[in-house]
Length: 375
Image (cartoon, rainbow, N blue to C red; front, side, top):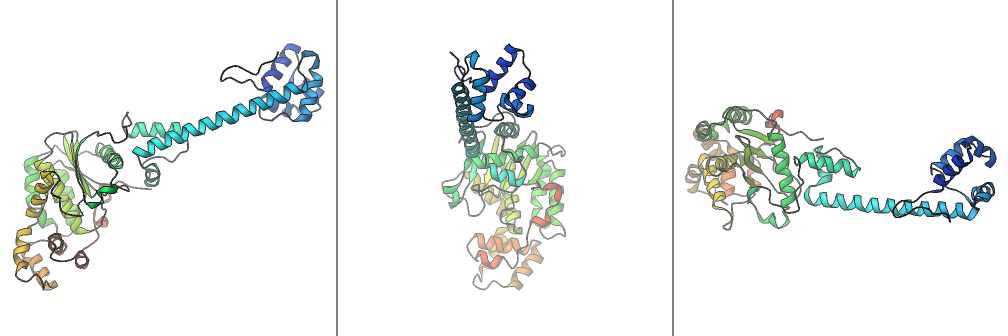
């Protein structure tokens, strides 16, 4: 009785042919001559690269009839082997899809391919290894809180994906870990913070401020956000240095300066534990149910951007805020017009549509060495 294998091991017709050749001390050339085939064709049958047709099965049945291998054996052996291959391929495919789905719940794989933060591949094992390397050894579970995070969130929070935000944060940490800056000085950061508004009107003020930020030991990176993260900025620690990460989601000068001021406030006031992280959506004011840290960071940012002076100056005639008044205040108080209109709109005195005439795009002002490049 001839068998085709046990358990998950299935012996194909080529296996039996190879055994028969050994028993008879025949070569593949000998069999090719008997079958009236090329040696290449015989070799492909033995290595299961070619199926056994009815015609070939009949010839094999004739050649090996005395050994108990009729043509039905060869037909059945080939059919059993091909069915097993199809089942194995199907199970392998299902396993690959399942693995990709599990990773996709944690990481926006396609988006990371587009950004060049993962190398595009259809090989699941390679993808898994990339994910392990990305997370520094341990891929998190879905919705696993890996960090002591607090979120500043707007109404978009209902669509917010915390897994993708953690992936974005991990990317920021991976990049920050490669940056070298001087030893962090909280005192020097406090001094720089108090002069922040003056940088808003300097020529190349954005670049100069970021360089100064590095000099006091604070790392800065611009890292674009992921879908469903709604992030403008973040603050966290990288070894012994604090980090400010900025997404440039709105690509506006006022958004940049307010986000930077907000994140530095977190560093100065809140991130006492080096595992703590602030992730911020700056589209709206901090809501009443959020951490008091967010309100305090807003207050610090508004103070350093001279919001009280702005509101006092324009409060007498909020219905008639002219370009001349904005430019005059900008000159006297050494603060950019975009910041003035941004703070007025933040308090509801002008619409966001009105601030565009004074605003400038920010991304081109940030030096390339602070940016995480994308494909």
